Image (cartoon, rainbow, N blue to C red; front, side, top):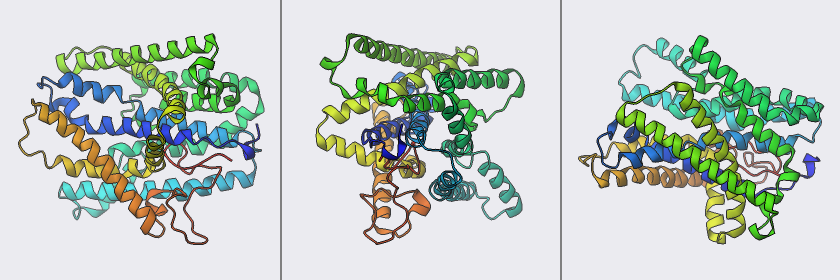
Length: 405
């Protein structure tokens, strides 16, 4: 595989758009699906939104690995490659993560009325949050991505060393992930295990495996249905039915627990989440190529732009959602209007973030410091401008940016 000549895959911006839609659904419905709307006659639907769309972040993790291995697997691991890799992550991922962590943490202190109190204690508390990805609820994803970036050159070198490692990448990743899950349940008891990249190792390794073998896989993604072999058609039908089955069982398990208090062993929730979201990552890959091939060009253009902005939207949308929720006033929680209010939050978070980010990329110099690499289509036409994405290396590989040749 010659990574320097890799075909660009514009479909992946659509994948990012679908994944960020999942994230927005989960975050918009989080309060309602928790305890706020338990007595609503529409609670089943609110819980369904919250659980079904949990594929967002795991799909981004899968895509992050896919893009990295798609672009780097055919390259020799040299000091120059590693240096450039980490330089870009430092500028376009770590720096935005640091600034977002500072901003959200300071805002939380301000809202709680303790911003100017005990500055030394607040500083130590912030540093603890920074190095655990917990400065705000959504920042754990960037934190685990940084962990994976630290390991990436070693994993890349290992997979390059033998096709046997590639063949067993996903099974080994799944085994290590579940080994950690079980170890943590019965011995370690790490509360914030979701902020550790090993909790998602199967997704990283699945992305790596598909990227490395993409030439042999892409046929069932790009060909129309009537041109696929019967075996491929059966696999697609099996994938879709397995995905829907796992998703609805996952939804139902959480509904029984939240609404009726019928809880079961935590490993069942972990297992169903894992099956549901692993299958979702593959389904989204198939759907993404189908949309790119069959959808009207305006729809493709809309989703492509959403995908290009997804990293910045991910960073800023919780702020808009928090502001929006302060305007619920006296909407009855058990009314259909409240369901509309939930979806209103999703739309405000997406549209508001989209407008802010797009304006910033177009008009504010060095916007990449806050929001990461700027898509070429939005970069100000200034010669020598830094911040837009290089052609073959996505700065936020799973969440944003161009890539390919």
